[in-house]
Image 1 (cartoon, one colour):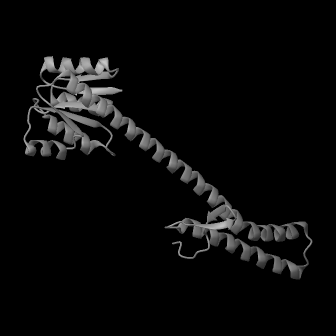
Image 2: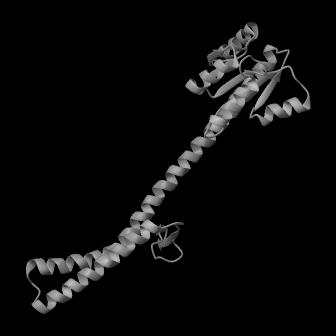
Image 3: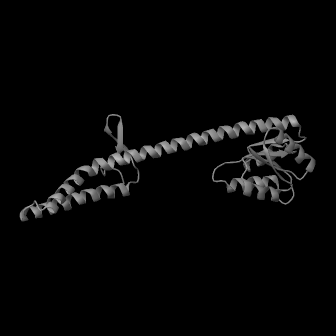
Length: 225
């Protein structure tokens, strides 16, 4: 996993980088808030560790920018701070940080926060994967229901339309029957057009039972648009 470390204290930054590298992460480094924001914009790492007090942009500033730029809450942000007042920690969480670790920083405390972050990111990734799989399944199911509905609504008028076209094309209809065939063709074409119009105007699609164990999209025109 890629992890961004931002701290203007070089010794502290090297310590955090070493612990992250030892845990198997690819480390991205920044010595001030402005650089940290630039690196995040370019790389979008899933794990971000920010020192609260940095030049150019503070950790809070960077955290707020990250949250404002995300379509969803993608990055897991850990703030490193020497502040411990309740109001300070509230400000940190309000800015969008997921966790914090207090200074003086020890390798043990940092490793603990990293493990917590790893597990939280893994859970979030699993949840998103499950949501995407469900969305795909629903999408495919919707396609299937739409196909069944279109077939159900269009097959009969289409068969009548094509049958009359075949009679006319083959010259098998008498002059009187030709007029009747044309009327049937027009009527069945309008039925098909109505189904297509209903399909295009659906606002709250719903399913109805087609046969036992099978559903189709409701194109009846009742409470569908």
